Length: 331
Image (tube, rainbow, N blue to C red; front, side):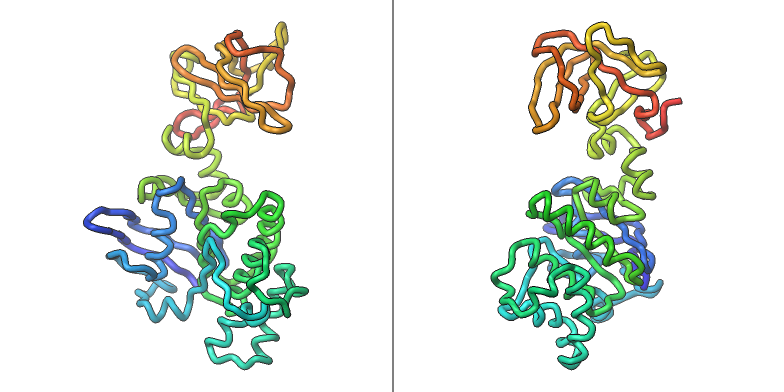
């Protein structure tokens, strides 16, 4: 099933929270809505699902036809930031959506059990769901949503609050679970790596408006402008006065490499000299904040740096890792 919206606007107290002229998710596709906190991501998701009390105008489409609240309730399953589980067994929670649809317990078991297995929690089926960890509870919530074979699956920051290891494991298992599924999947996230891992396309939402839409690699690696670049992790932005180039050049911290004293710069690299202002240990790496005339450079490196705040350092950025302000690669 395909889902989309046209001229969708959400307002609260006369203030526009979201304004999206057009957005579509195809059957079998995962689209990530990426943006910072407060950008309207969850508001957009709830508006598309006709959830909440905020005033909305515009049209939501299912398979190209206008859809009402009843249509959406039949077609949509949602997984929220914090899983809401009943006071019952893990299995009964996974089967709850099916039982609400009038499916027999035996048939619900047949349809829900494979999803418990796919999400790695079938061994917990008889346990009280109230005793689960956060990661286990989210796995059960995802299994419950997938068990009803939804036409549309909405994922509202499902990895929030999970530790790094639990998040990585769940991310891998969810990616495998979604592979080959016919549902249109809309993922709301503030995390670039979640979008890259799960979504074929990404929409960047800033201040309630779509600023960029394309394949995930295009959006993450070729930001449309400097504001988008900042939000997407291009913290180094070098204006023409610094580099002598025609356009502002942007780079991510991991691509800004400090050079040792006397070390030659790589061929075709852009090299800038600046004053080291701060060194921040990151656990296995360090972050260097470097001030250059008219700009600043952030470098994250695993290489030991023989410099202290106040020293002059040289930073090299390979041409292949630089983009111009409109996202084009440096040639």
